[in-house]
Image (cartoon, rainbow, N blue to C red):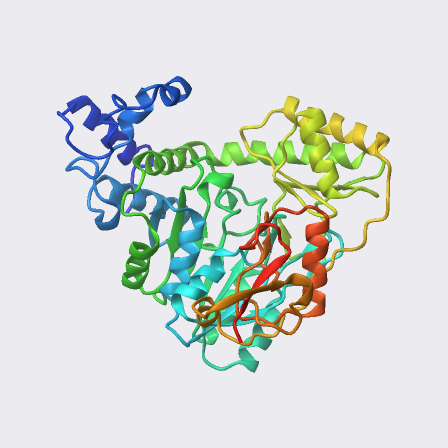
Length: 479
């Protein structure tokens, strides 16, 4: 069945409801903006709050969709090539959680790529699944994690019986994609589902110059942050399902656990209208984003001492998102470059690590904006004092003493971080962004792990997970 991609069912329903202008005795209490604080209306105006509505006979119900929301999800499903698409208002985080909850029962094994986002841990805690970790390749070019090797996936299935699913992130924050098509074949031949955190890849569908999307690669489920690369509002995402291995009723039930029962209609309308824009203009928009990224990459690579990555396909990098700008300056910490760009040149990039700065470029950017980044990087590369930056390293996966769920619900106490060796971790610790945990609850602190965390603290990394905000103490499982 073919749908009219020019339609915007949720946006149209909100407009129609406002045209009816009923006397409103519903949530939210600001009642179409009449009761909003003046500081809010000075910032956004009153009109936006006319569309901040609740479930009504016109606006439908996200958790039992049968009207405008259902139609909008059907349109998205057709566009992205899924058999079923759910709208998400709690971000890709809740999509990742729902994929895990709906795929494995407590005590069952799930293969997990170790460079996954921290939301995967939340899914493990809720589900009670037992993780079997697989390490991605290390890219010496990017000084970061690379792709997940299909050979490692195959080995993991051979070495571990009864794995029910495999979850990985593709593309990564750095735009590196894995060979999802081959990995899907391996998973399916072992009776397991392939779950993809595709938060950074919602735009892949709209260009054959980009890696194949998860749906094109026959993944069973994929969560996408439409807001990250495809134009909707922050926190709005989609969960796509394909094939008959995933149990849609379990997915629906899982989403009722992890999604708000008071979903934002403004967020849902932004998904609806972003889908419309992609359906009508997507190929043209992404083609322009690719053109602009290639211009920016070429210009940055012409600056002495600057490397902007792209085209470095090797055994650790299966494919790349050309619109993701990742660059480094010889002898400079990525954090320092990031801060100099922001505080001195008024340029805000997405994130940095010890080596790289990551800039998310989109179809909304201009040549003038690209040129401002080029000129700023040129000045930084010429003026800043250079030092020695060690190669990328990541501690080995710590031994697991307890499954994440059991560790999370165990009694805990504090010890000094530098005295924690050999003790069982009671909390997740993850530099953010990108939000990849260094240690999970239930894993044993090693000397290597403690040294890595201490170095991250020394370098003033933004770190999630410490209950002790001084980051001198960590929670451990009480002996």
